[in-house]
Image (cartoon, rainbow, N blue to C red):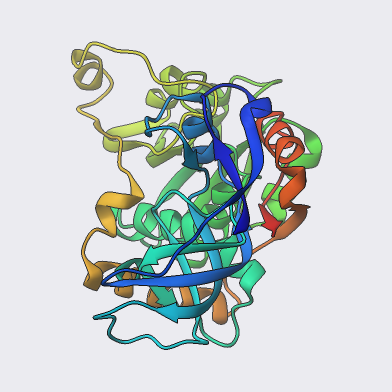
Length: 323
């Protein structure tokens, strides 16, 4: 038996319970992983609250890093003792877990468990957003909402490293400084300024090639006014609530814009894509161009406090749970 965070009914942070759960032996294609660090992400709150559906009871969590302690039949390419990271599957809020080997990537020596737990989901998200959804190149101008957040800081760092002009939004002067330190060339305090008007001013009316928006409902309308004709709006999260239905004609009126709502899990569905994306992520982190800021840790038995802190917008960078 191991300690895990179990959801019996969806709702607020108080529905999470620490329970003893059996792990069992790994089946065909599976391994047993002892978690050393677990990622805390907004997607966890969506599952907990019921916005994303899962059959109860279930163990929460979508990201982690640890060592393989047991192999199931037919597992190729891994051995007991391998240091691994993973994302894209519920069940990480636990001391140990079973997981499909196809979802694992080996960690380079330079990547600690805490770094991996803070970057597998966020880092791979930043990778596909910048390199695949809208391939950012030198000379582009990008707008990053919630630029002091976990994904936001990575988008700022990596976007700047790719040669883009990075405009970030933040909710406080303190978070604005974090965004600047992460590489944002301009930061807009969206609580105090009309961010669309400021973007127009900053760009001399040329606007942005792409907007990366993990906020959702609160920023959607203004974001469309920040994008140049034929530019792209990328909605990858909904921290302020889901974007409500809108008339597609709005996209033509704003300049024949493209709009997409991608998910990481589509991009890493093929093993070769997961390997290539992870290699790209590990390379840019190992080079020092992108740093993984693990700014806060919680114990597993502090998970209610951790979720309250996350939803209260009191976190910056990555937050990890130590089981």
